[in-house]
Image 1 (cartoon, rainbow, N blue to C red):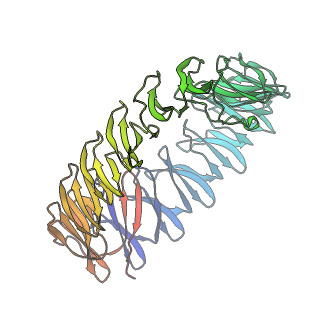
Image 2: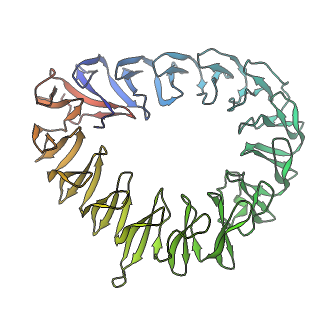
Image 3: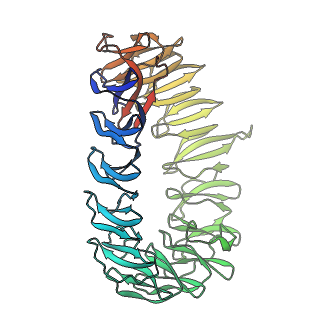
Length: 554
């Protein structure tokens, strides 16, 4: 088990569930009828049930009593959404009631302390103490945007601006709004059939002359004049004239895809058309605000006279058009082909490698797979280069797998181990390799498993049917259909008599007692607890998980 995880045993008695810790000491009595699940975050919470009601526990005990009909397993800003009698509220991860269950809907308030709520069909806001700071009297409200202290409310089919005190800053006069966004204190609104923009006090910033608008994104707002589209900045200046039939929003590189008269063009924020950029999509009618970027890492692919190169967002030809085929930039490099051979270039166009590979894959993090045909057998073999262009694994393998801790060259279906610099730790003799707690490799061959350390030295021989877990140099292993525990010298700590894998935590080991019961022993196999009937176990830490015990006795 991961040493950073806390372990609770779920034990049963007379149809009820309780919890004991790794020493066998009670954490919570036999109060529960079931468990629903945990949380995919480090809050260490578990949802438990009493009949039809839900509550919360952690490794210290009961946090929230089982009085709720449902509990959301998503924690946002230290709060959990709960439902009671078809009404929603919020509780803290300490079980405290933040917002009472009075509402038909409740948001999360990710960016501000104000949370949208709905009661009796009307909308308002509560703060994170549960106080209703803006009463539920509106037909609709927008969330408060990040960095903006006002928002829009709707009544009688019209919108107005309200602040966090619930004070109306404008009359209800706008027929539509796109809201505040992008941390910009200007919002598109519609008035008398035309769109313009107002500031947070309702003062006009952009005149009401447009037939359509979208919200601000990456600093610009798309506007429609007649049936043509363009872009304005927050001061209302027309950055891109309204001459286009379709658009995508400007991406983080400052590039947008626009269509005009059934042709697509690439434009930067200075209204400069970047000529020659490849069109990955031919159907201009599909153009929309969510189209993907044509640029990767600030460079766009172009083709001139049948050759490929790259330009920056100002249209400057950064990498000359001399390649027969190119990929897309990944982690600062792009694969490229000249003639029949592949190599890599950086963002300045300098060669990272020679062009002598038959196939390559794009960079992933700090490495890229490279491949060459054997000159006689014509078998394609794989190697690995680093971000300096060094071939740290030669092209001698069927494939090379990169993990966070090591490299795995493969040859004829067998795997080896190399460190992240390409130094071989073990040859390709294993059928499987698995990292265990960043300290050991579980290795398999001929359906038997053993353990080696990070240097490749043997820790456990190839004799076990399974190696289930490791804890501080102790290994849970399986031999002839029985589990036991051995140390790093392969000395037996717990004899091979267990039907299920023993759990190890903080120097205590759970083992079977017979008759469907279990107990805890220390590292000397001395009993440390009374017998208990195991229902499952919970691991609390970077995530929370519940595992049902396979052979719970009735």
